[in-house]
Length: 159
Image (tube, rainbow, N blue to C red; front, side, top):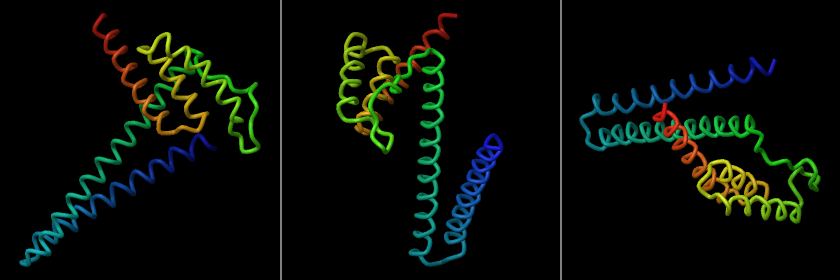
């Protein structure tokens, strides 16, 4: 059932966003075309500009999410995901502070040995996430995605 519900919800959300963006563009254009007042026309331009910025931001977030899914699938396929099953967890499911620190120290040493590899950057980002440092995790994950894209581009041109 989950196989059908998630795509349906995603489709409905995307359709809703398209309708909302379309309506806002129509509303902005209507305000520009139908009014002789400069303030109303300015408000219409503002609505159009904010709609364009909102659509761009939505696309950027989705593109980043899709790239994160691709790199996570590649990491899982290569078997480089962090194994945290044997570490101490809090009742909430998060790692205990000492366990997260030990994991981070181990992964950080791997990263120091090969900082230009997307795999070590990916593992470091996951370690930051398990340690609770989401800001650094996002920064390092962006680096991992860039390095992976560069590696794929290099492999594509070598063929």
